[in-house]
Length: 230
Image (tube, rainbow, N blue to C red; front, top):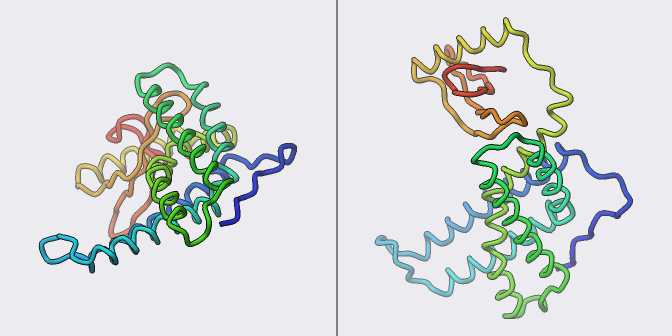
């Protein structure tokens, strides 16, 4: 595999939304890889879930590991460090809270994984060799960590630009959407999907608000039962 190029040190840095998009594209690709791999692995098992075709299972995992590394090289290798830097800048500006230590640990873990992946991209094993398969297998936990946890870095980084450019809803619209969200929650038609913390430490939750078979994405600030914004 050709090592992914690093961005020029004096070139323009990508904005936070662009960095978040690269990470999102990687997560989407990893989801596809995971589904495809599970489909193949299912065919290597008997009806009790036991692997009966070990060679095919090993080949499927080797293909998964290689595809995951290629996805990282395409989408994140040139942007991972900048994404983590942007996330840390936002994290440093947040008011003290118990959850911040956990987030900082996640970012540190992603940085360590990125360093391991970078070393492999800079010094790839011989293509098609057993050494390459071993190298890729060792990287899988680091690639999976980025697939599982990079959304935290993306959400943090995205707040840096979002706080400056997105005007809040008026009081009247906040009240209207809050009432609609509360009504949907009472009906059991408010589906919470993703949560993070804003720069002021308040929890933000994305949800699908269902009304008359129509679904609207809303952002809930604080307790999902009390405040909403479209």
